[in-house]
Image (tube, rainbow, N blue to C red):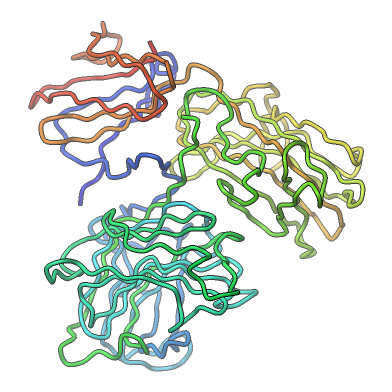
Length: 544
């Protein structure tokens, strides 16, 4: 399997690069940068690079166990054994066996397999969700990569919504199915499309990238970047609701054996059978303003799309209201949030993640109201928060605004500045100041509007016109891949700004040589450099 070889040098030489940008070192390593996808920002990925025989990351994945077929009359028992699910050679392997096994439900069945999911761990609302998978083969096998709405436990299926990114059944070795299920269009009446590989090729012969691009009122299905089906609210039976724009969804990977659709294995089916998953990646649309040009980096910062585009909701009781329903700061819409009334401390709100580089500086703020007709009570409080995180998602620095509390005057819009670096467990302020600085090791920034309800007190908070403004002169972020004997460098540009590619044969401090100049147009720049086999070469791109 190919792995990207990209060095964002600020993670290694942060202080020096805060002045000169990102440094790239090439020493003849041959690999493709599969994570680069113009127009999209990678917000999460599992590359399954753990040790052979290990389990998938428990911070991200949990297991379904038992059997019964979940309404499909499947024949397998799902287990959490490494026999059925493990990391192997940089892939996730889900392996189905023909074996007599008594599951956690006390029932003995003739097959075992695995089903893992991000439920309770990770969830997303909109984006490009993709996985590179090699499916198993054989009559009765049913591999799948799919999603369910996070409200599945409370509203049930199909009301929660289901997005099937990839399904294949053994008797159709060349065909992938993409489908949505919802209230009034589920099971045999679901809405979906299919794609058949040309020339009689089987999906099990090789890896393929299966993806959906999921927007507010449209979902598109892809195999290897070929789009083969689109669903919109107009695709549904008359009067049936579109349930794919209101709440986040979680991911599921599994291999079922038997069931109403694929039928049972027969004498031609060989076991064990494996589904290999090279990676799972989640992207979000890159903001229209290129990161690095200054300005507000948040998408849909005033909720003026009238939906949750750009935002991920967490907790519960998060709503959008028009100006005829609730007071707004500007525009037509406002975001309202209140507690979950569980009796225990709970957090609800919205978040948005953006790529960052160490040394980048931001100013963050937003407008908030303690509404007069639903004012905060008890210990309820809300705040704005910005955190900088490493590649594993660990918070390296957390900044918060002052809180909105029951003592905040009601019925008035207040501007909250995110100015205090805090200990996230105690709330103790460490470093008050107007600028938020991405520390060494940062790869992403999370902006959140948070409501905390410690007990059962009532009241809500309104948020509007949120902002997270990138300050000038950040380092330049490089992506790289190889095409034959050419090294291709890509980086975001700002309209009208000049960029210089500098090269050197030695590490800094060096005398850089100017190799090329560009004028940015706001899109990704792409430049090719001829490779000299066996020779070390260093590159940097700077704002000129």
